[in-house]
Amino acid sequence: MVKGKIAIRRITCSKSRQVTFFKRRTGLLKKAKELSILCDAEIGVIIFSCTGKLYEYASTSINSVIERYNKTKRDNQQQHVTAAEIQFLKKETESTMQQLRCLQKYNRQLMGEELSKLSLEDLKNLENVLEMGLKNVRSRKDQTFMEEMRELKRKADDVEQENVELRKKLRVLSQDHREIKGEFAAETSSSKEMSKSSDQAMPDKDDIPERIHLQLSLQPKAPSLDAHETEIK
Image (cartoon, rainbow, N blue to C red; front, side, top):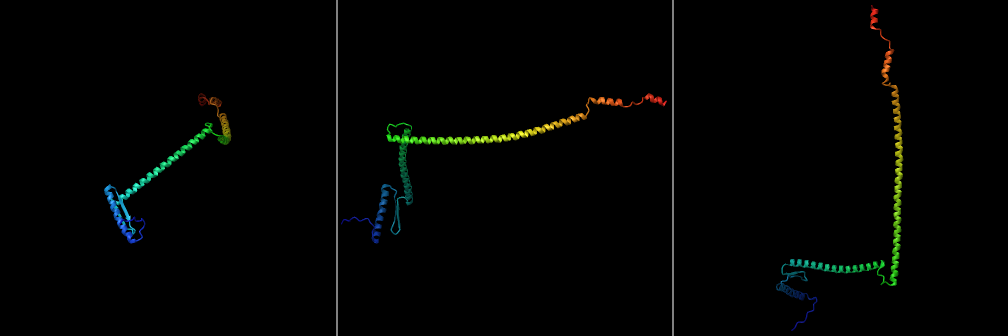
């Protein structure tokens, strides 16, 4: 009697479910062992029953199999992410290059080149853009000119203020100089007067011998020695 196909769904009967789990678990572990031996494959099988009991099989070590699985999974994820990033960057590069080409073409049109393929409406739009740009340029030029004028005026005011301060300092220095000069002149005149008075009080060196001679001539003469001896006799 040929067995019919069993529907793959949860077995409701707990006894039948346990029997089926035992049989299929044994067969699965047996097939894993055969596959590892025949094909020199590193195999690890981990099974948890409905009651939470653990069953496992590893051709080498379950820990090494798990580590190898995690490492390979990370590498595959990184490769997948890298490939996706490369694809995204390629699309972004193509889009950027297309935008660059459009901007370069538009720039050439603004410079008055490659206008033959433009329609009347496109030419009007380009003219409006140029007029608006020219208006903005003139406005910016006027603003810059006014800013430079204000800056120059500020610098001129600063220079004028510095000149005023320097004039004040110069006047103060000139006044101090005049006062010092007047004091010096007064001291010089007083010293000259003192020198003149001292000159008048002290006799001239050339007149001293004449005065001494005059004084000696005015003194009475002493009697001579011969006359004195005559009187004694």
